[in-house]
Image (tube, rainbow, N blue to C red; front, top):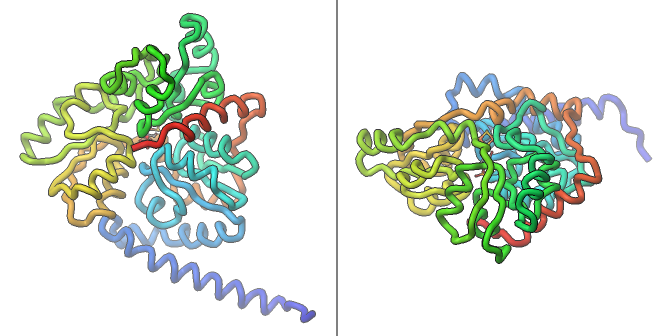
Length: 344
Ligand code: 13P
Ligand code: SF4
């Protein structure tokens, strides 16, 4: 067999670097309408490095719809709402999953594909809903309402999922609740999502007091002033908003449902009542639609950046693990959802 000289290795790596540079340059076309050229120059070195590292580590990047456009449209291999990310994480064949989203999403990916290494680029990427409730809180509720099944939003820790009968996302919550065939359920932890689910089903809902710090800030007055300023505008709201906000909107649904509403209906002008990056990403996919952007930033989602993703792949940090005793029970709750909740 011919020996491989250091010179040959060097020229192979120069060719590969050139390839990643060409690939990165071509990616600008995908984001040019929302990323100024001057800003793009800052992103390029990290994008090139991430493309190279993904290949070296046999890694894939999963990104939630709230990730910034330079992440969502360039280095991400799989994108979607919480439900899609949970489903698609199960089918990943690469060795490493880098989850660009918040911690509960990385935990869910680990539950769904326990043999893979799951990394989150910043451990501080939490969620106000996940932080609103513990496993002990769920045990106390079950003692108070014996025999009432527990439906838990995926925006929770694995500890909380492990105490639950089934999980749901905003894309399948009513479907999951009704799949149980009971008269009442404990629905945790989002109080506003619980109200929105209660409006769509005759099942009695016992709720918790968790709230999304991003969506709780929208008010019906915001919707009224949008309608005043932009007559004819179509307004879509996430169901983590309070009930009066959802009632004032034209449509409510998960981030995936909002994206597909815009793609299907092509409204002349639209406002997405949700996290800020969502509008950038949906606008890129729908160039004919005019977006008004009365958004709120999620500080947790915004912890994830290109330098953080690069660092994560360079150092293989931060690995997300779930203790086996918790993982088995939490996985069952997520798998029941995936089997039942088709989503909209
Ligand atoms: P979905 O993408 O499932 O609609 O969830 C929104 C959200 O807030 C996730 O943190
Ligand atoms: Fe949690 Fe709300 Fe941020 Fe989603 S947008 S991660 S629900 S705080």
